[in-house]
Image (tube, rainbow, N blue to C red; front, side, top):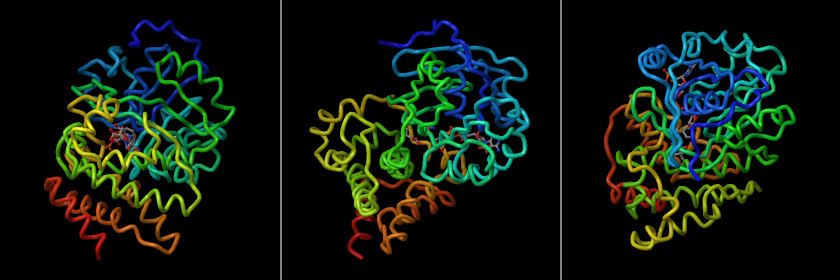
Amino acid sequence: MPHTDNHTATKTPGRIAIFGAGSVGCYLGARLLAAGAEVRFIGRPRLQAVLRQHPLMASDYQGFRHSRQLSEGHYVTEPGAAADADLVLVTVKSAATAEAGHQLAEVLPAGTPVISLQNGISNADTLAAAMPDARVLAGMVPFNVLQQAPGHFHQGTEGHLMAAYDPVLEPWLGLFNAAGLPLELRQDMLSVMWSKLLLNLNNPINALSGVPLLEELSQRDYRRCLALAQEETLALLDRAGIPVIKLTGLPTRWIPTLMRVPDWLFTRLARKMLAMDPVARSSMWEDLEAGRATEVDWINGEVVALAHAQGRQAPINATLTRLVHQCETRRRAWPAEELLAQLKNVNRN
Ligand SMILES: NC(=O)C1=CN([C@@H]2O[C@H](COP(=O)(O)OP(=O)(O)OC[C@H]3O[C@@H](n4cnc5c(N)ncnc54)[C@H](OP(=O)(O)O)[C@@H]3O)[C@@H](O)[C@H]2O)C=CC1
Ligand SMILES: CC(C)(CO)C(=O)C(=O)O
């Protein structure tokens, strides 16, 4: 059933600050605004200028659409604007987390709940280290968000938000629900984050491929690359005693097997997974495209670190990390066959 734009305004438990309002932050904030929340966006002058000229629009693959012109003061660039927030959602990229934490530590009253809605494993810990007086909670965004047009943020795939269980979040759940962003509180965030990371292992492959997610996942050799990276990670998680949870239509452990099947079978078995916008790309591709440092060290790099902690190697993930770093300095696209050959070669050494 498509979400519509006629949510009745919900009684809001307080003010929300979105810290690092880019794709994910603007999308979440726009939906919360649509549900009647008091939201302040803290981000960069570039997007502030865009949102002065264009309305902030959120849409999703189920037909939700909401648009509103932000008033002056809604989207600001000063970290101090978070000072009176009752809840902070951090949505900066991983390389910016430590700085965001230090900026928030300067302005937030002790005990303010802060949710890290970022990919990777360590961002909540990095924030907590920078602001020991705040109540920092790990969170997870499963779906893809793309800025389709200036000020227009689109959710292209399915899934719901998760965050670490803390009673302080309970009063907010009704609002998130009304916003069409159900927030599930979990006791097993380490498993949630690693399960999301297993899906994010596709980010470097998508970024290296240079093509949209749908086109990339439709090619068996790219999927074989993903299967290699996921299998390497699953074996390390098993040794570390970290269980994985199901985040897609398929149990997480079955995904590498599904990735290896021929294209004709994959399009049948993975119909739900492939029900995405043909233009959707990974956030890592967007970083390469924009000439920014990527989050590869916080994704594949975490797998390499997990292996080292066990006195082992993670050659597939180490190679993907290296190739993405190479692309950060000298951009090139990797055809599926060539990328697979490169990863198989690594495995033999
Ligand atoms: N995009 C997606 O589909 C998904 C992304 N994620 C994860 O969510 C997180 C956010 O991703 P995404 O929204 O794509 O990233 P974006 O780069 O679009 O947004 C982050 C924004 O924060 C800004 N920023 C960084 N530091 C500060 C600061 N100190 N003060 C104010 N603004 C700051 C950045 O500006 P600048 O770049 O100029 O520094 C940027 O505009 C990442 O961890 C990503 O992996 C998770 C699921 C899906
Ligand atoms: C939604 C998903 C998995 C899409 O690749 C993502 O997390 C990202 O782009 O960073």
